[in-house]
Length: 356
Image (cartoon, rainbow, N blue to C red; front, side):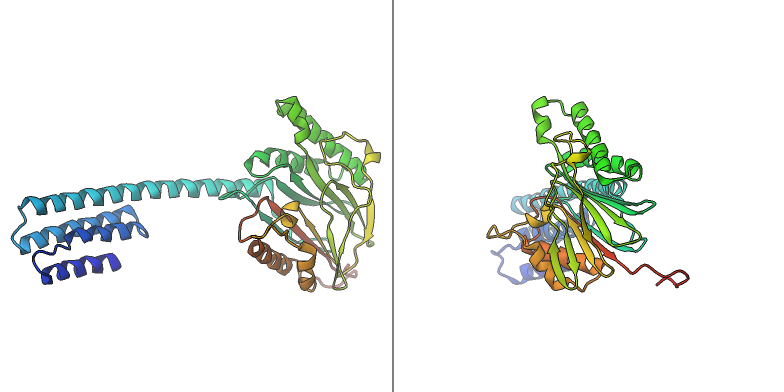
């Protein structure tokens, strides 16, 4: 161990140098270094050895009882005790942080339940990156559920980020899980979700003039189990990307609806867009935390352009590439929460065919 070797070296060198040179005070470096990588017990042990070495040096030169040496020993003991104290405080805070992280992980799993890797003919992978330091959850949301006709999915983004947006995110996810299969069309589902968000804002946002500042952008998808026509209702959310035959297509809605919780529109106010989602295609849903990530020069992350180089990757590998590239682009510091879902349609197995 380096601190122990340091005590031995300082003690030996102090014996060899001229008598008017005193290296004993340098022994305080040993417990200080120990505290940087060890706990309070080992730090206290090294501090005690340093004090003992200082006393041994005084005995060797016959000056142990002099005022100068006694002050050096006392000062070393006090400094070592202070180092141990701050080491204990650091360890206490580290344990508290570990508890907070564990609670955040549990909350994230309860709020953002991991999406299944397979739903019917779909392969699914998801990724969540929180902007808040030490946070595991924020204002972005996603989930999926099977219905009689296929799969319905939602990805959304609460205005703002961090723990302040978690309650609104939880509200929308809970509402979607309850009513996702109770409405025949996506516009009807969007109306139900919009009403849930509006009621929540009316009940829990105290300042009336702040209600207009709270909203949730969302993208609703309906992927049929049979056939390839996929339906989408966009509520102010970034358009998804479709990877088809090694090309990237941005599925911009010509009729986007406003975010949930803003206008209180009827079903006619939430248009449906349709597109082909064929076997082998991959659909990428994301929040604006991805496209608004900036590098040091303030340049936004060119999401669609970067995805072009990974069109042959499966959902899990694709998200791994995106995660690495995105964090490298913004040097590990996102300005907003970012969520991404990759959905790949596999060929529908023939009756009696073995699962692969």
